[in-house]
Structures are given as structure tokens and as C-alpha cells.
Length: 363
Ligand SMILES: *Cc1c(COP(=O)(O)O)cnc(C)c1O
Image (cartoon, rainbow, N blue to C red; front, top):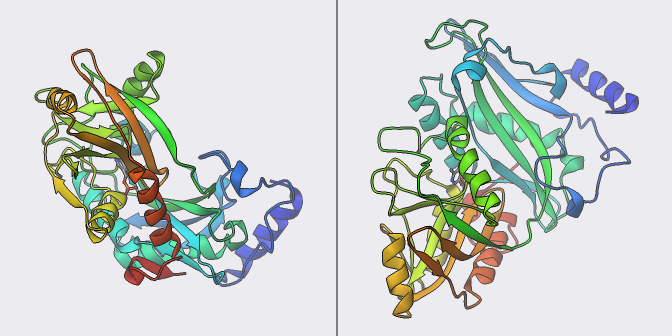
């Protein structure tokens, strides 16, 4: 961060005025929206609140990102006691900013926190913290149609103590990452035969780092084999498709779009839910049902399999061209559907069509 931005941020924080925009423009060396690869460029400020058993959550503050620190001797670092969300703020055609489905993200963060014994963040704090995070970085929000601010609300056990128990100090923070409008990519997945991401009774339905830690080696193995990412199978039988890397999965069979049911091992994606609604409105059949890879391979030989995609907030939609494993594989034939779904989703998220006003909350 250059000296001038540092001074501006300091002046802004001293005013303690959440409505005052500290930036009129991003720094002069900030990349164009299309050059913002995911995860590289973080915005300078973070919204934060702290929790203690006596006081609950403190009122939220805005602080420079570098001031938010967590000890190596915290439950977060040692035992994975943290949960997070990923949602986006978009700019509508009239220039205003909105959050996409923040209520659903607030509810999911609460569910994730409950599973890990972390204090829950109520919906008001969640939404106002996300609004602040966007307001102070409005200058970083790309123009309509060209990108978004990706928000990463996180609850982390911050008490410095090594005992294995619920911590008595926690931190809630919202980190902001300006990002591009993700182009539609096509990927091939490797159906991992040994490792699993989640099992019944475990953490699969919580958005937490532990699932990502369980999954990284699978992603690395898939890439070593020349695939783009891993297709996770269920832990009990290693036969049913679960998720596409860190995205929810849809497959077209007999002109019906099928996605695995929320059985406690699948992350309940907001994008998944949005697409179920949009596809049904588009006159398509959508079902939540188990999908065994070997069965899909048989269906493919009978000409019954169409397209496939993965979906999530970060990537929006990714076309899947094939899923292969040591025992079975399937090739998908996408008749242009996936590109159309991607456009429908973009319109709903960015507010370029009037449909589903209730999904977009003005900042
Ligand atoms: C976050 C996430 C998704 C996608 O959820 P969205 O709410 O659509 O962003 C899917 N699978 C996993 C494992 C995830 O962590």
C-alpha cells in the first residue's frame, strides 16, 4: 500500500464515520477488472467485530487489513475453529451497488458456526458488516457487468490458548477482494477413488477450512493426472458423485438436470439454489437425486446423457466436459445450455433483468 493510501485510511478510521468514502478511486497501479485474477488483490480495509462470553459481539469497526491478526496458538490455527462465507456485491446498470442473496449467506454462516461450536453472528451484524465493507470500497467495485467485490465474512476462534475446548474470544471479519466477471471455462474432472471430502456426521455441510484441507491433496492428484479438478465421490460407497471440486454439481440425464441431494455431506450452495429456481422457471426439469458414476457411464452409452456444470459464487458456472475415474468415465455433450444458464445467472446476480428483486439488497 502506498503512503498516500495509508494516510487516507488512517484519516478515515479516525473519523469513525462509516458513510465517508475513503477512496475516490483505486490506487493508480490497480489492475483493470479483467486482470484481477481470483485471490490476488485484496482491498485495503476489513470490517471487524470481537466476541466475548460476557459482551457478545462488540460493535463493528473498520480497520486496515494488516491490523487484523490471529495468534498461531489460537483454535483457528491449531484446531481449524473457523467458518466462512463467500458472497458478492455487484454494480447495477444505474451505478448502484447491491449484495446478492445476503440473507441466505447469513443463515448458512450461522449453521456452519453452530456445527463447529462457534458463536453465531446474527443476520443484522452480518448484513451491516457486508454493507460497510462494500461502502468503504465502492471505488474498487468494477463497472456494471465487468466484475464484483467478493466478500469473505469469517468467524475465527482468536483466544491465545492451546487447550482443546471452545474458545472464549472470537473475531468476525469481512475481507474484500475485487474480482473480474468470471469467463465461462470448460473443465475435465478426475473422480478420486480413495480420498473423500466429507462423510455423514462430519463437516461437509459446513463452510469451513477443514473441508478444504481434506480436499487439497485430491485437487493436486487430479492436476498431476492432467485434469483440471477433482470430482468427489461419497465416502461410504465411492460410487455416487458429490461435488465438483469446491462447487456443486449438475448433470443432465433424459433432459432432466440432476444435482445430488443435501444429505449433510454436500455444501448447500446459494448458486445451486438460485440455478434450481432459474432452470425451473426456464421450463426445465430439475431433480435432487443420487448420481452414480458407473450408472452415468451406462446412460451415456444409451445416449441419455447431455451436459454438466459445476457452480458457486466465485466461478459462477463452469462447464464440465468429462468426469473420469479408474473404474468408469463419462463424456458430456452440452448443447449450448450451460452458456445460457451462465447468462441467466449473471443477469439475476447483476440485476440486468428485473426478475427476483428480492435476491438483491441495495448497499
Ligand atoms: C462455497 C461452496 C460451494 C458453493 O456455494 P455458493 O453458495 O454457491 O457459493 C459449493 N461447494 C463447496 C464445498 C463450497 O465450499
